[in-house]
Image 1 (spheres, rainbow, N blue to C red):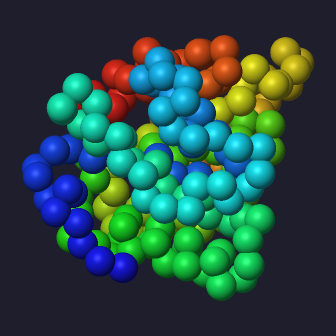
Image 2: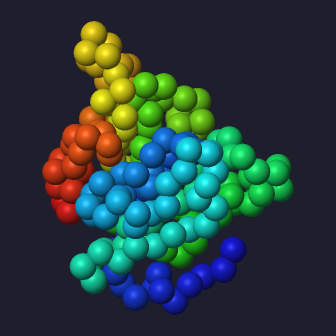
Length: 177
């Protein structure tokens, strides 16, 4: 894949990972308060590179391509998966945190569990974010979050809405810890 001097400057890296269309870029935008910083799209697979955002000259927020379905050819999909796994598991770069974003409405998928298992095997410091909680009906909120918690085990699950800015402070605190 290739190393990059930019990532070797000693600045901590916080990486955002999740299925395609789960809202990784939207979460980054909500954290920074800059709506168009990370490009968003309604189409799965819009992010096809490793995108770095230097925040206050103190931390890189790293937006990875989504895993799973992408509106792209099989060759492109395979390349995206290779980039993700190389950066997280095969590169020399150390991530301060890996923010794994799951869709609160959909819940944890088998693909999410496979990624989480890979991150655990590599001893990564993982934070689980249940994005899009604003899309949940009040009657299903607690059950959906419990289902996510049960699926991920001991990891703390942070309820989040990039759109309504729910959970921003909690996620910032997790990133800075």
